[in-house]
Image 1 (tube, rainbow, N blue to C red):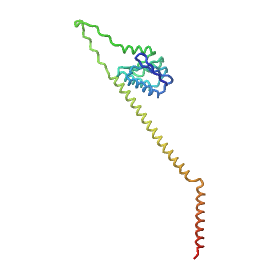
Image 2 (cartoon, rainbow, N blue to C red; image 1 turned 30 degrees about the vertical axis):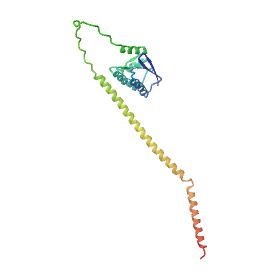
Image 3 (cartoon, rainbow, N blue to C red; image 1 turned 45 degrees about the vertical axis):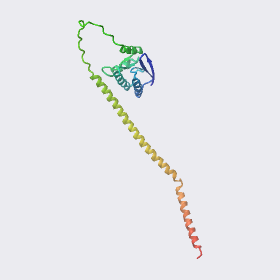
Image 4 (cartoon, rainbow, N blue to C red; image 1 turned 90 degrees about the vertical axis):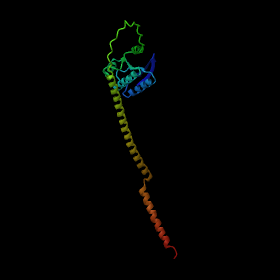
Length: 221
């Protein structure tokens, strides 16, 4: 997957190209997170593929919730109807918005950015009390955010465990290679004809001993 960044009015647009693999979810997450940290919290993700990994949709849902906390949004723009249906059915109620075209996405951001109209002046006698609005239940959204955080934490712990296993395996392989290296060094230290060499050495020692004995016999008394 390749990603390009552009900007249209006040919206930052990340456009993906090519097949999307599960590992690409982390790449897209890093790019969107950087934009949010830089204060750019109105982001559209343009996707041309008809299918994307579930991991990517999950990351986009979490990033949209983060952007909402900063009065922003993360949305998806795709002409692929199967992908829009998959995003719509990912969670109930649907939280991640998707649009067929960039124009529709920009219109969406224009609406949420539009300042509210000033209220018309009214006399106190004409003013009537408005019915109290029902309290907004924040529990579903809070529970969804909590669930997403738990899922992200669980995946991170799984990745750490797999990394530890890989490190342990590499350490075992390193020990085996060191043992093989020590064996090769010892073999190089010993000459290939070591037995013949030792035999010649014993023969020289015997000859030297006989020579010393003969020299002792020839000394004058």
